[in-house]
Image 1 (spheres, rainbow, N blue to C red):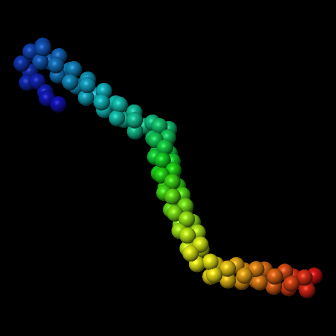
Image 2: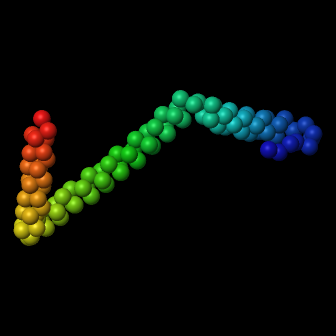
Image 3: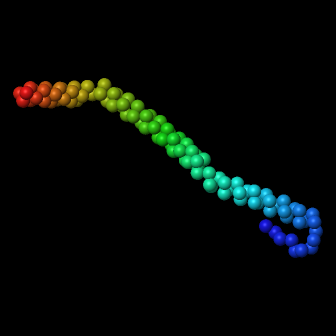
Length: 103
């Protein structure tokens, strides 16, 4: 901000006052924005929501790709998956029989 040298030029003084008012208005607006906690929280929440949605979309795409890849592997190599399924079934039968003997 410039200060007049006391020359008494009314037009220069008016221009300086207009500039000072404009700067003061900008300062007040900046302070009001910082003081508006509700608006700042809403803005922060919106940013967080957008980030979460983006990451959820990426995760969904990754999971779909992984499931597709696992399905492709299972179709190409069905024997290992059949052995795993048979083992899981046998384990379930053993657990059920053990529970039946207790009761």
